[in-house]
Length: 163
Image 1 (cartoon, rainbow, N blue to C red):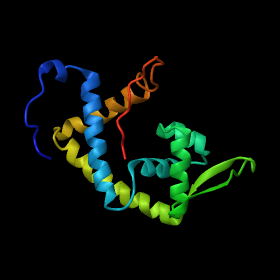
Image 2: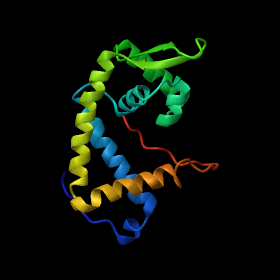
Image 3: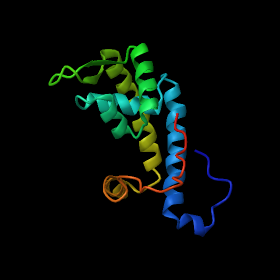
Image 4: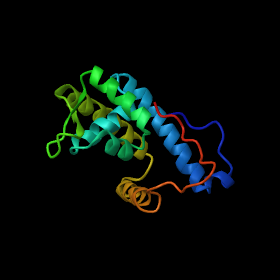
C-alpha cells in the first residue's frame, strides 16, 4: 500500500476512535476490493463463516455479524440464490430455521479465507513479528470486552459502508 501523502497531526494519532475507525474503514475497503475477485462481499463471508460454526438462526447470525434484519434477509436471499447457503429446519426445533452453508459455500469461504489471510499478514507485517500476536490478542480483548456493544445515544454515529 502507498504511504499517506501527509502525516496526520498528533491530535488525531492520539485519538483512539479516529485510529480504530480509520484502520477499520481502510482495511474493510482493501478486503472488499480483494474479495470482488472471487465474487463475494465481506458481509457474506462473515455470515457464511458464522453459519459454519453452528446452528444459528438468521436473527442470531445478524446479531453476531452486526447486521440489521433487513440487510440480513437480503444477504441470505442472495446467498441462497447463489447456491452458497440455505435455510433449513433447526435440528432441535423444526419451527425454527437455521442457516446452513452448502458445499459450494464452504469452498467459497475457503477461497475468501485465503484472500483475507494474505491481507491480514500484509497489514500486520508492518509490526515486528514479536508484537503481532500480542496486538491481535489485545485488540480482541478490547473488542470482545469493553467495546463489545455500542452505547445507546440519541445521535449514534454512522457506520462506514463495508461492501
